[in-house]
Length: 315
Image (cartoon, rainbow, N blue to C red; front, top):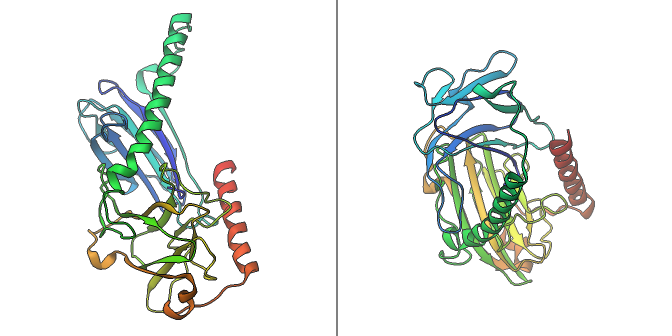
């Protein structure tokens, strides 16, 4: 997700971990425990998933959360048997205005202790494992489109559904497109009451398209909302002249994903997208509330994206 900073740490279910941090002003901060890693043959089960509404945070935004085999309590979450990974997601809606927080993790019984000195055998094993992980990840992300997208009818999107993998505060709608140079796919969706709403395009390699120098994703905050409360995105190779253009950047085929996060209710089909295909030259006459923006206005949008990512990644 172009709007998300991802952090993960491998865990042992019989150990205790201390996660400390400071809550920033981003739209969402969530925690998830998985029972393994993603592989070319399966998605790991989610053993627990929650966002920062379920933890105690002090008046300065600071928090301390513990994960371990002990009894659950305030800011203490029990690691179920098989717990293997903690994933933390920090999600932006306003790339320019929201500020990231800070987070770190340590094993409770290892603070102040140095790890054993590395040996040649240990290094050999580590590099061997790293090579296997690299190959596994390549195969995994090539398999993802087949699992979740390519079995669906082309140029359609699913109704909102709880995201596979157990991120309980997120719903998503997915699909894949196949568009000629003169074609456009118009996606119409209501502006949500969820704190985070976003759409993105990706390649058949399950890689986000260049979201820094091109507009290949948009959040609810970044999108132009029409007077009827709807957001209308135009997915196409050629420029339709609208603020909510999502650029294919030379990818005739690709995937589309919409996300809603930090939900306080289940979404229904009425909250989801509608899709219409048309020729690119039909967009000005068929798109409700069509309003052309200039090349310089669009360049300003790209400049804002570049600045937003630089601030997020470099501070």
